Length: 229
Image (spheres, rainbow, N blue to C red):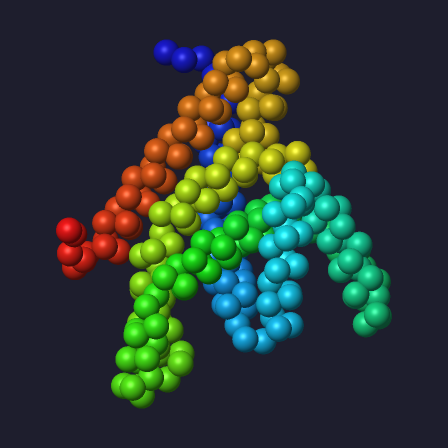
């Protein structure tokens, strides 16, 4: 029996935080990715500039630096804004919120390119058919475009999520009680780094395997009804 010196429950709690962080960042990143892709393909130049600026900056800065900048910088920015409205209380951004923001921004920047390629892969005839049928643009997007974009983009989005899942470990540097943070605490108390880092590695591996299975299921479900040559 593997002796974790009483830290087993702590590691499981860390796994729960890791999952919450990954899923929350995924939700933020998907929204930003769709908005970014739509902006890049828009005919409105300012939207294109904003989207290009966003993806260039975020993809050019290491994720660890993004986490640190948001964690330490967001408080200053928010307090400066609040002071304009006469609010002078201290505003603190917690590790979880900073992690979701940083990882969501990073995921969204990469997802922008995935969604842009998927949107460009939709035949123009699909758009024209929806217009002929008199569909409202919003209905056309949700009924015609989005399901096809989702099917094309899903493999790329799935791969990005696997990267995101491992990148959650970066947020431990600002005190988030995730798997890595719990493993570090266990190591500092037991002086057994090999044991606890190996356990942490297997926990991330297990989460990755489950995520791969879910992505595979979603890909099969999204491809229902398609003929294969």
